[in-house]
Length: 201
Image 1 (cartoon, rainbow, N blue to C red):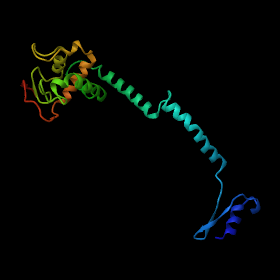
Image 2: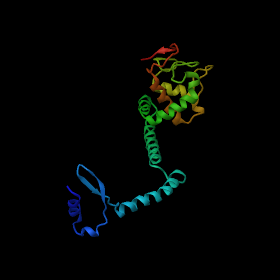
Image 3: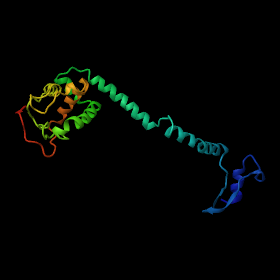
């Protein structure tokens, strides 16, 4: 297709002499192209975006604006809190604690408490250190969820290092911690302490 043909086909409503398009001097397989300017609306959006970007950066990164990721984290935390509250409505018994153990938000918080309050005696993964192994099926004070709850809440036998955490932690945290311990059973961490207590299936 020749340049003349392109000019004629591209002119449409205006004569060729009135067109502002410039025909480039190169061609590809006999095809030439016009050096058309960008549409005004496109250029306007481009420059407005550039002018807007500093205000966006200051507002969302240095001021009170919240990024989408921040809003998501906030909403996710709110949902997790609601789910945890729902899970805590279950009674303090074996079934209620097993249900609580399935709540990921509650168990995430309980894992943090376990790491700060319990790991020094029971090791980071519950495999036992000064205190007994919490991952096997041998228990000194009983391995049922409610028994674990009572041990944490009221403490172990006199003279042992197991304190009554119910005097230090709030009731909700004690329940979450008891539910968390039930999730450790059968995890088989490295270097477990030898079994103590009685076998409980």
